[in-house]
Length: 256
Image 1 (cartoon, one colour):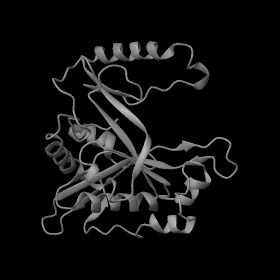
Image 2 (cartoon, helix red, strand yellow; image 1 turned 60 degrees about the vertical axis):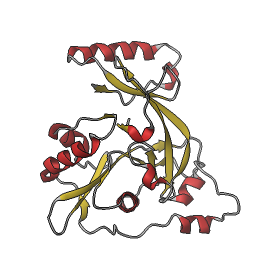
Image 3 (cartoon, helix red, strand yellow; image 1 turned 180 degrees about the horizontal axis):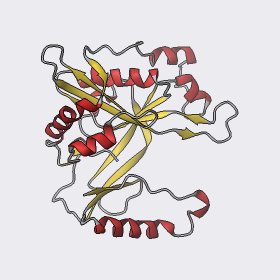
Image 4 (cartoon, one colour; image 1 turned 60 degrees about the horizontal axis):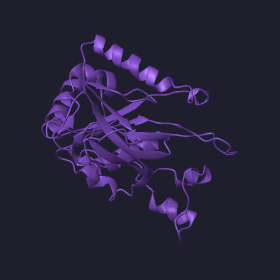
């Protein structure tokens, strides 16, 4: 099955009917690889979606986000109180937490495959996929894991990719550096603790905001870690594949 992540058309060309042409060409190329099903998303209702997910937002640099106009102070909240509310520790707290390395690919692949098999629709990872999509690359993808001090096994994993945002018309900031939660597995570490460490390292890397959706088991940490619901929803669809029943976001093991 193919996963369709982005369909981008320049603003000046968006009324020219290019999207159907691009989709047709993409379909042709996928068929040439003998792939006949696909997963994709849309902010619009195109047909009956497999599920509908919501974006959640966690501020890492509240002052910059407020100055850039991406958010505002809540009622009866000052800037200093907001900064204090979203303050994070200086370093991860989980023993054995470190950045993923190439030697970890087999263990991470096995961990992901065992975890994702519980969901109704999920990505089928192999080692080549993990090497390409999850090995850390600066300003693209960041992946971290927890190694048990006793057994030296990889027990937990988290990852996020970058999504920079352009800020037009702002005299102080031109961009906001964001990251989006990707694949996360918690077996011995609690999800809130694991993802709090992810927030900490994202902050250390200089990112301003951390996004996540309510797929898989993400709901277990969103509110506790002070994520708040974003303004948008995304609808998941399957091409040339039918499910008997729709899924809850927590039953979906794909992030698009």
